[in-house]
Image (tube, rainbow, N blue to C red):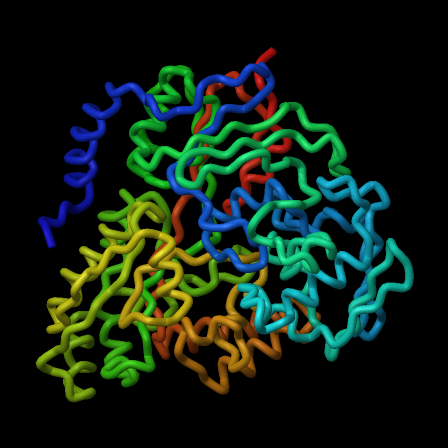
Amino acid sequence: MGMIFRGKFAHKAKLMGCAALLAVSATAVMAPSAGAATLRMAWSQDATGLDPHKQPAFSSIRLLELIYEPLVRLDADLQIAPAIAQSWEFSDDGKELTFKIDPKAKFQNGAAVTSADVKASFNRILDEATAAVARANFGSIEAIETPDDQTIVFKLTQSDVPLLTAMATVNAAIIPASEIEAGTIGTKAVGSGPFILESWEPNSKEVLKANPDWAGGELNIDGINISVLPDETAILAALRTKQIDFAWLNDPLIATMVPREANLELNRTPGLAYHVLQLNPSRAPMDKLEVRQAISCAIDRSDVLETASLGEGKVTGPLTMPAFASEPSSLFCAERDIEKAKKLMADAGEENGFSATVIAATGEPPTAAAEAQVIQSQLAEIGIKLDIQMMELNVYVDTWLKGDFDMAVALNGGSADPYTMYNRYWTKNGNLQKVAQFSDDKLDALLQQGREETDPAKRKAIFAEFEGRIAELSPWVWLYTSNLYAAHQKDVTGFEPRATGSLFGLTKIKLPQ
């Protein structure tokens, strides 16, 4: 690999290149729309598919959550808020969850959203053949009843405190039963959300129009024209020249340049998603605890953050949500200890080191290559020779879902609840267990306890124990959380950022008259 720039030197070197590129006209930006109230927007990474139940990539979720709706959603304060459902209630024993559907809720084909659609959607999610990415979150659902068109009752095998949080995501979107029966999910998008997908040219542009029948309220814009510009310097140039109104930025370097522009404003929001080095403990020698721990001890998380993300974020442990996160310094090998790492390698019989491949995606996050290079340099000090394999995002996602890697540099989604965030990886029946390639009876038991416990203080103690144990077992090495960036013209107002990275806050946006 090439030379590794570190810290402020990296920032300065990249800035010189960016300054030259900013002079280039963003010719790929979509032409201004005829409707004055249409938001012109750009992002660098496009969706990889249109099936809301099967898409794990952030770029897909950001598009699909504007088209589809779940029963409930998380608001800007990470609290449960209405979506398709206008009310919900758990039974006294916590084993029954009843929703009342908003009678005004309609799909974009004009059909009313009914309990039959909800049942069909969750049956699809629960069907293992679907390969729904959030299936493990709904294992407590034993039966689904539909007493009438507006009422849906989930019968549960146990009390399931995080179930509402699990439902508050586009991966649990409600889709028309008719589309499921027709087998058209993924080939077209028919949701009940605020915007209708009029056209999609992959890796080029999307055209969304406001849904006049959206039950969530009246929108201030007629639609959104989205340009896909892989080079974020071109996005910044388009903002500077007012060819676009709003942009979603992934690269901290580009984002930190926005405040220098008099006509632009930057929304910087700490995110729940985490940057992580995923190890594959099913492959030797990472099946040895001491090797995994040595890797954890050899990595300087602060250096990775400073070099790859210009310090735009904070070092983290496994839990990133404020209500549950432990102080990272309290976790196993939080500070780099190279001598301890070398001893652990010797204890494992790997004092001469070994070779491995680490995969990383191009485009999202834009820091992935730099993270991989820093980690490559750090692990070389304990004899681990890393070959970095960069992949296009869709290839990376397919490879990642198969668990076909030695190590992976990843950016994984956070959640407001630890169980919702991790059960799919770290329980024996988790649908992403093949990605984690690691199970532990104690971790499984702690997640189950946290799922059932209703007392907040006791839940926090349970998940603190979970966090400490998984950090010590080191199947993955958690690195840092980063900021989320939205840039827009100063006269564009109303956008509500969210720590989840959701762009649902575009429903509040206003353009100048």
